[in-house]
Amino acid sequence: MAISRPSLEIQAEQEKRLEAAKCLKDKFEGANLQLVTNVVEFNSHKLDSNDGTDSEEYENKDPAIVAADVAAQTSFLRKLKFQYLEQNAKDKYVKSVVSDIDDAPIVAAEDNKALAIINDEKKGKLKLAKERLAEVQQNIRTLAPMVEQDYQRAKIATERAVVLAQNIVDARLALTRLRQTHPQPRLTIPLADQKLVDQVTEMQTLSDEAAVVKKKVQAVKEQAKSRALEVEKLRMERAEAEKAVNMSQVEEDDSRLVPLYDWYTASLTLHQSIYNLQESFSASENELHLTYKLGAPPSTPKLITLILIFAPNARRLVTVRTSGLEDLGVDVSDVIDSHVAANNVQGLVAAILARVHVAL
Image (cartoon, rainbow, N blue to C red; front, side):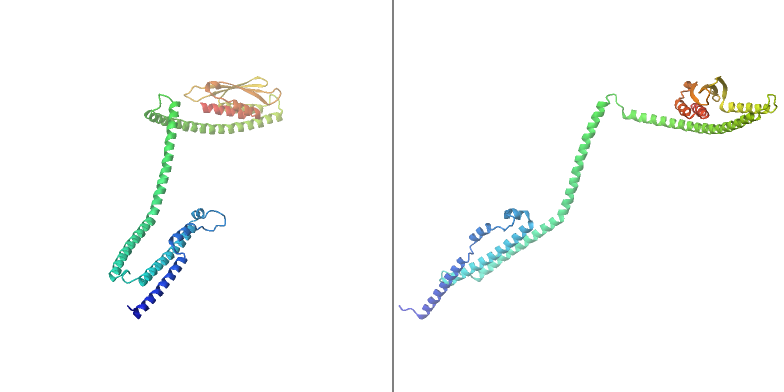
């Protein structure tokens, strides 16, 4: 049976296409596009580092480098996937072309529609997943500051609770030590309140007494100041009178001495009335006794004796002895020491009498 010319041409054309498919297959295999080989190469890939450290450790240390490497790998995988799909489609197309019509897979419009429907469903699911992912990310962005604030408040509350717990422990230890230091019977709250009321009443009473004593002291100070001025004036008049007597050099029967004597007697009487001088006499040439009668009615007058001892043949005070101050509880040792050191007899007598007036 003879073969027709058109069948020979179809066979020749099929042989050409077969040769082209073989060449394409050889190029595909020589292009090193197999996924297994690329996976091995990808896993064996390492970054070049100048410091000699491991690339994985270096990447873990720098997030920017990790992000850049992930972006590069994602782009490479997308390109690799696209090339694979393209080559796979070409391979299927070539096989469908060069193979027999009966053996070739038949792709109908219904198959394309079914694939389109499946693709749309997958796109819808992908869109919903992306929306949920965006919503979750938005929720994370919104709730992250709130969670941070709650965490900070919880942290502060925890620290405060720790401090308060430590304070409670310290207070219990202090209370235990106080109980050991102060055994039974202890001061109760009602007794403490009553004691506080009593102390307040006592303080008010003492405050009133202190105010009264302060007024008395002020009055005595003013009185002592005025009397000191009068005594100083009398002392000056006495000095002038003694000077006039020494300068006059009159006879004993001179009539001018009588007024001077009367004036001196009156001055001495005034001094005794001001300072309540009861008695004064000289026990020896260098020892003078002064007795004062102090105290205003209705109180009982007190006799105070001051014994002034001077250095012989010198007008310098050596020591002072007192009598009657022990009953009043008055201590004038500091006053005596300071005035004896300054040889201030008038100031010593005035200071002692002032302290006695305050005690009375």
